[in-house]
Length: 432
Image 1 (cartoon, rainbow, N blue to C red):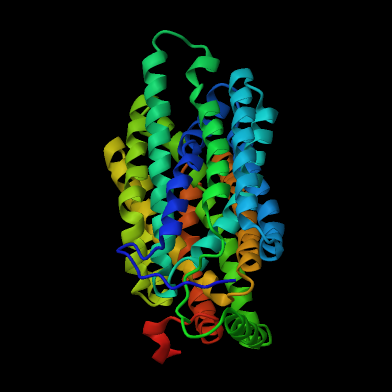
Image 2: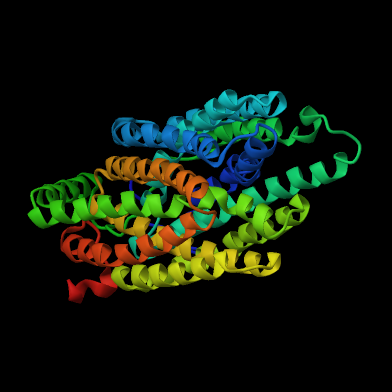
């Protein structure tokens, strides 16, 4: 396989990767729209309890958890990762049509099935895509690379959300037919079909970023293999990986215990006008669009232990202010900060995981996804139970304490992992 060295543009990406980012806009059009309406429709139209809502929400996560685990192994072995991305994109399109049918019929089981299919195919799509991110970016700007991906993903979500919500505002005074009101959903599905075709036809898998310009690809593969054997025989690496998996699992429980209920909490405790709630939520996507690459560039400059400590402390503080807010627009502003913190923390994790092994990135991403999404299955269910049995604020309060308790565990994982990763943090090399 031919390796080519590209000069970094201002975003640190190859032209091939920029092509990927343009295509991904089509894939992301319906994500925000669907995520916003599923808890509300399940609650208002289907009469579900908080526990039942959590089951519908986690159906997506269960699907992603299952596919993420084995897709990592498949992605490392397959000769065509672009074909995997295309299949994932096509089947995500199919899942939008299933969800549309559920919205029309108010059938909660069909909604859960469609949401699970969407999650399963997201794993088929994102595991090979994230490998492409690592392969087509400079390791010293890897967080920036993932931030740029998140930014373009958010652009698509905003375009899709503005289209879908605007259409509802226009037609809802004239009809209450759900087939018309939610007709943006099959349009999102068609966009995924188109994106899959474009990705398969236009992305060149042979183009990779490499700083090893004076050696052959066989020598590169040999270097990777030797590094790999040292990594997997290291006790420190094994213990550090165990800590990292534990953090992914517990952190996902923490991150998902309250998030599915944010819009319901907002409607039932702060503002009952759904239209106002929609426009209070939209700025969160705008934040992701504007700040994701900048946050990636920022965390690239930080030692991972410093970055995760700062984001965890700030995350706990913002969550506390969030649940004590009584004003819709203050809530929206705090939600912006909360999303920025979550994004930064996620970029730090992805950067670290992408460096563990160059040869087995798919497996690492797949196993990481499995435990992360397993935690995201437990989180909403636990959140729904404590919401019903204790109070609507309970999931948020639990989230604060768990986030703070994870800091020492992450510091231990970083200390154990960094001396053994395949791609070291150059700016912190002297500290290892």
